[in-house]
Amino acid sequence: WGGLKYVELSVLADLLIWSILTLRVLLAVYTALLFGQAKVRDLWQSPLLSLHMLLHSVVGGAAALLLISTFWSDLLPLISALKIILFWSLVIQLLSFATEFLSSHPTEDARKAAHKITRGTFRVTFWWGVVFCGNVIPLLFLIGSSGLITAAVAALVLLGVWLSVRIWVLAPQMVALS
Image (cartoon, rainbow, N blue to C red; front, side, top):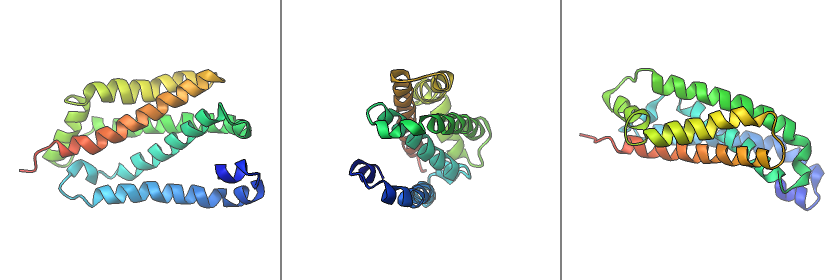
């Protein structure tokens, strides 16, 4: 989309935007399905996994576009909409984290992996990196921000998404299989 806009094929870009967005959603959910195939990693069997992956996609996409808008003026008309999308996606993401990690898990291995994330090996990265720096701070500064503050908020969100995905991949693998 961005490439088409850059070479001034805006009409074609506008026609393709819905296809691109649909493929993006399908790719995020497909990633969750791939994780779900790893039957021995119980935390990856969570019914919220598709939601987590979809939220990472929406949050990451909105934050990336906000960051790029600092340098690319064609995105300026989208900033208000991107901020609203990012704000509510972050709210939903925090609620999904609370649901996932503050509720009980059906198996001992899933409980152990969740414990590693919230109270064990990854607790500082999760609470300070993902929750506080990647979600709470951006929520506090997002709405009234502009320019470089918006770019900084977007960068924090992208850092939070990266840390979250990293933790989500590593923590279940640290639980012994036997």
